[in-house]
Every structure is written in C-alpha cells, then in structure tokens.
Length: 128
Image (cartoon, rainbow, N blue to C red):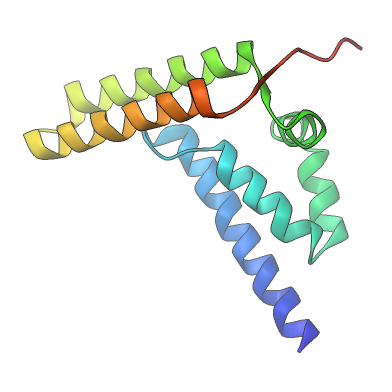
C-alpha cells in the first residue's frame, strides 16, 4: 500500500508542478500555492524530487523562504501582482473576446491580488 501512495504523491506533485509552471504564463492561475503543494507531495514521497525542487534556481528559494518565514517578501508580492496583472491585461485586451470570460478573468485576478496582498504574510528579506 505504501508504494501506491508514494507513486500517487509523485504523480500529484508532478501535476502540481506542471500547474505552477503553467501559472507563470496563464493569468489567474497561481504559482506559489502549486509550488508549495508540490513541495508537500514530494517531501512525503521522494527525497530526490524534493531536493531537486528546493535546489532549483528559479523555484527553490521561494519554497525555502516560505517554509522558513511562513510568508513572502514585499518585493516578491509586488513583482507577482504586477506580472499577474500584466498577463491579465494582455489576455483580456488582445486574446479574449467574450465579455463574460473577460469579467471572470478580471474577477479571479482581483481575488488573487487580495490574497497575495493581504492574506499572505509579508516578511523581511533574508540578509545573507
């Protein structure tokens, strides 16, 4: 039974990582929660995959900082919100024609902004 659970967690962690990567390019799809979920699945199923994730030059520092401080820096919040809204505006102006879909994307973006801005703890940057 343990091996089935391990395989399931690796699969779900990999799916979550794929969604995190897709979230970089798709407006409204969050990156950080999927990365944290990936870390959760990998730490419980594969030490090697977890190490690769936290040692990744792009994603690793965010996961480790979040685990250590239980929050993200103001700079990361601002960067995330600006990037999210850039993608939302590009999508709604140039790619999406349906008014209801535009409204849905803007609404999800607003929710993401509130969560990122007010619900996730802001921490001081690490000084190394």
